[in-house]
Amino acid sequence: MMKKNTISTKDYDSTDLNNPFLSELFALFRYRELARQMISRSIKTRYKRSFLGVIWTMLNPLLTMIVLTLVFSALFRFQIEHYPVYILSGLLVWNFFSSSTSLAMGEMLWSGDLLKRIYLPKGIFVISTIGSGLVNMGLSLVPLILIMLVTKAPITPALIILPLSILILSFFAMGVGFFLSTAVIYFQDIMPIYEVILMIGMYASPIIYPIEIIPEKWIWVMHLNPIYYFLQCFRDPIFMGQFPSLKTLVISALIAVGTLLLGWFVFTQKVNEYAYRA
View 1 (cartoon, one colour):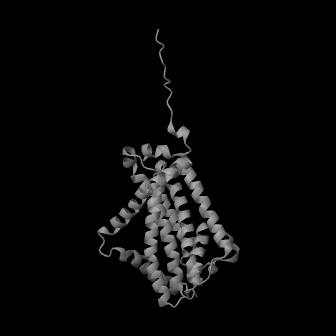
View 2 (tube, one colour; view 1 turned 120 degrees about the vertical axis):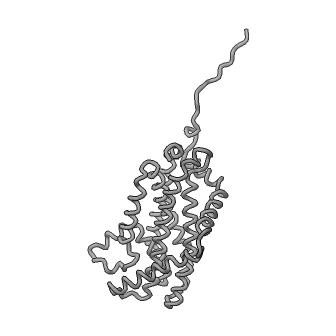
């Protein structure tokens, strides 16, 4: 009598066998070429029908700087040498952070139909928006350098640390982007709420005003604002002509890396639900 072979019908879920924190990271590495193409597509799409094209990326912060310089220097009479450099350097940091995190959230929400049809590592949308933001920030550095030359602001060897400052800022923005991308899948109302938070955050950070105008007893509140440290890392070599202090660099790096790791952890814990909820 032939013995019948029995096959277990137990279903195996691949998520039980893999650590999503690591598996999604490896998937991003495998799809790195796609991320590069998405960044390239985003840049081309942005300027495809624009009359000014890439020039607008440089003119936008420059025009904003001119308006804010005229308004704030006239109304509040800030006694800051090279004030245009001060305000423009702050705007570049803030514009990169606010636009990248907002777009990361939007890209995740709008990609729902695509995720239902094909497999993609979900984090690729956040990575591509940060990459696009870095390209735009690089272009925006051109008018900043021109303003430094025109106003005779100090140009020192401290500028060589700018790539590190930008890298630390991008890690922080990426971590926040992962948090927001997770939240928006479940609570779409977070997008308009985040716009209000960004508006408050801009005026709560020393972007257009010097920190010296804040009363001494409230300085500690400013030190609770993580953007303050990223501004210092970026501004010190540009505006002050000196390297950021080791303390500022360490605090910025710890905040950035900590936010990135925590944001990635939260993001990957819900990674298998995004296609169905987006």
